[in-house]
Image 1: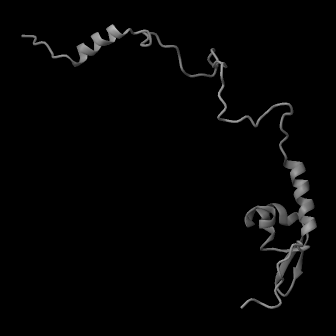
Image 2 (image 1 turned 135 degrees about the horizontal axis):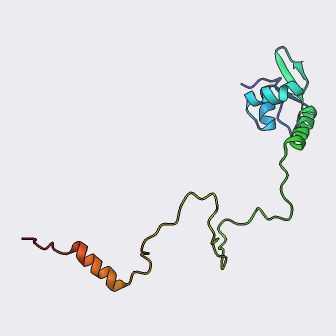
Image 3 (image 1 turned 45 degrees about the horizontal axis):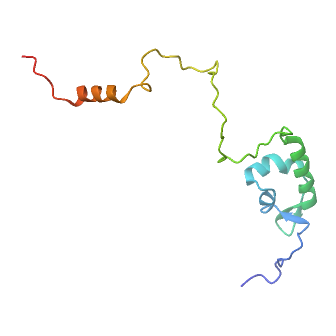
Length: 133
């Protein structure tokens, strides 16, 4: 049976957040909360053994953290282009990157091989071997 004195769920967020719930409130694991957040916010006893944090102070810390650590995106650049969009007439780059480790290889291209030449080579490979005696 549930504890009759336990807090009832409501649509109003409580001002005090218990230590066990505070990392989840900020969306982080307990270890990261203890290293990053706990030294920066005040904590106070609640009940006989509990420790709590002020929700508004946690919100202020989160706002300051976002302001300090946020990575600014370049404006005017559309980074949200659909990945499945066809490139249409766009051509691939023609020049190799100077950092490329691949070198040009000499030899005969197989792309220009005509059908009759292919058939001749196929016959050589799959045909019966001639006796050398």
